[in-house]
Image: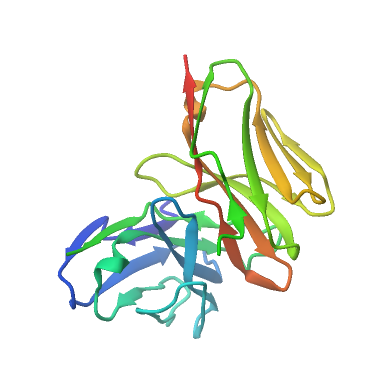
Length: 115
Length: 113
């Protein structure tokens, strides 16, 4: 009964490094999304996907890349990490899009620090 | 711009009393509202929701009220229990962009025994 699994839980990067945050779900959900949470702000949507092969930008997409080659996986790539990307990242999934009956299930988060 | 605002960063109540968490929004196109609860080191979990066509939705000890004219919603927890201590996020979905959801900054609720 894994749900949404995010790895790693913690990561420290140097400015300019790249890395991929992993997200996997085992509920056969079509919709997946990435959020970041910063102090004093709500969760902000970075990118989302409504199905394999389909991705779109959210509210704060700059500096991030995503792809969705399978239903299960939705990795988030930081191309060249910047201190402004220090945040807690959450991946979420729902059965289909954000319709009224489809709630999102969140992973436990990845805490990223960029020095 | 923050379209969903939770102006109280924290709230402390006594066990057994009512907890009232508030949320304001600015986008009149929001048609569906949700509350999520988050414990430390865990992801948010869905708590309760309300459609814009309703003004109240109840689920056990949790009730959400929506006042569309004031663009305000509130979550009532009665009676409050120590296990309710968590951060509560208000969220809203845009009718015309329903793959996007906006969240408030959260309110940390502490229920004292």
